[in-house]
Length: 205
Image (cartoon, rainbow, N blue to C red; front, side):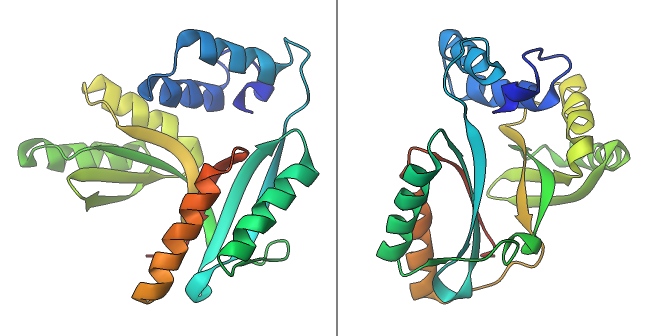
């Protein structure tokens, strides 16, 4: 899908980010090249479309599912079957999406205290809007347009992110009870296993 904006990694930052993520996941060069050729139309294959599903989940949680499909009916049927299994339901357009913001998200191993203070200041200058710690990781949130600047800064300092992408982040995360949280996790797992699903976001804290 990123290659629809052009197959040149230099001018297509979305594609460059996708390729970096694929390489980090040990995807082969041949597989990456085939995906780029297909997405850019070089192979003349079937047309792929992006589709978004907004969902009300367990405990009142909100979910946004991004899928890529060459058959809308097939994908919609598969999503509905998963939702029925977990007592979730589709929401109307923008009933859920408004609760999320597009953010650049970067994760890297937590640097030493001697490095951290100056690094945080430079990250803020590069466009970081928020910096948090979680499970030994530094998580950096940026505006989508600032993601590349933050990545370049880290590269210049020989710091390699474990993850860097634009994703949806809940504006006001909510807490659900233990049973609802377990049901929500099961729902997310089944959605992730669906062949056409690309990303699943929830507003659970």
